[in-house]
Length: 232
Image 1 (cartoon, rainbow, N blue to C red):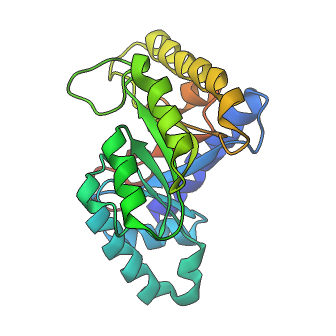
Image 2: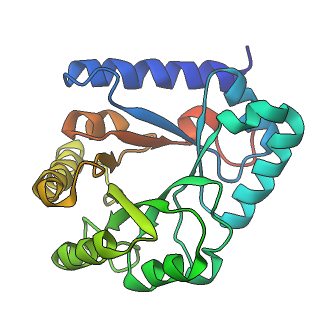
């Protein structure tokens, strides 16, 4: 087995262990964040069992999807694509093969989905839980209003929330951010309907904390693929 395959299986086992420890066995999906890595790396992860892949840019996702179709044929249909990067409204049109968009944070994106037409798009609302001005995401105080707009827009199906907490060497503070997100998720769930079932948070350095707090999706890149531009 390749190093990527070995690392993927190790991270998957760690995710499953953390989910069991949180009393939610089988309730957490590992998204292999493949941004910046060649399609060959995705193929290695796929052969090790990965089916959920996260990309930051629409163009890169579309290109890699096409290359995997060439390499895997019909098996490429087993891949579930996640768009996790900041989304420009003008690039919303070619997302028909994206299973979940994690990064919706403003009304203009909802309008763009409505204008696009095509299949209904599953989305998450990205929340700027640390209120960092340099980061994307809706402010906590504006989340309820954006949620109402998303629920009223037929072009999308609101599946839940996503966040990237502040980057710091303080597990207690990071866990507190994740728990705050989980509380927001729980508070909104009752009014958002049964489709509202996904909480995306946690990356290579903190995914176990995120699972402890209630994440249902974790986005792991470096721990699986290594640094961008390096394979093996």
